Image (tube, rainbow, N blue to C red; front, side):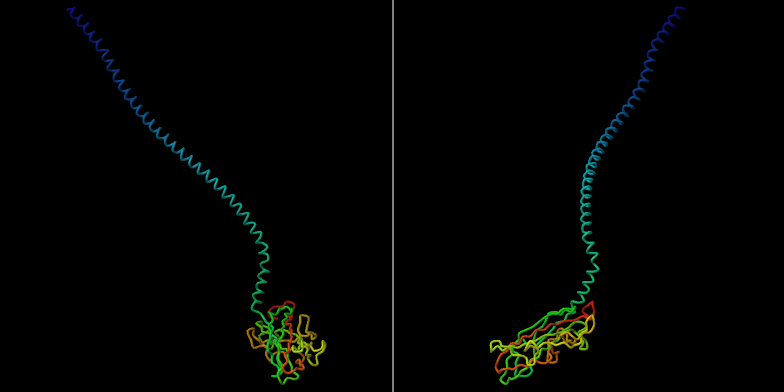
Length: 308
């Protein structure tokens, strides 16, 4: 009986011993599984992290390329900006130079404007002297050169001179014939727009030569020195900036003759001679009549203009 118990106990011990390793093996296998599972998860995470890192590296590489391109573009832009700045500096220098050149013009602008204003007023304010010879009767014919026109008469008292060599022919009944020298001023100025105003002054002379006798003088009868020549004598009251004078060999020429009036001078115009030049004419002879006239517009003030 006891033997059976002993055998049974031994069997139980053997079975127990056999079960112990199996239990440990089973226990180890579960731990490994859990550990392997953890490792797998870690590996998965590591793989994902590696992939993410790869993407990040690629992104960083792309960003680096972009930054490099932007850096190059910025460098190009900087170069352009420097070039532009140099051009702006050069332009500023040129503008400064232009400004320096314009300053004298700007300073002179008031004077220029004043001069242009005066020129603008003076341009339409013109006046022309017109002179001519007139025969005393029908026995003397003015064949050519009977009238002449001057240039624009200055407003400051300076003279403009004009003259002509006229040709006259004595008729069959000619004896003592006469010629008169007359003048008018065709004016567009305010002082020459009415006969009650004085447009200007004129003075001149006349002498006659007989072409048929080789140019011998046909003296004006009663002429003072030089013999045979008639000229304007003093006597008219001439208003000047310093006052009225009567010692100038000039005649006051009234206004009222428009600058476009082609009818003047005529027989009613102002004579520049103390009397007509009367000379002994030979019937059929041709005479050359030389005459010269100075036209003036003597100002009444020291600041002359187109209204004086």
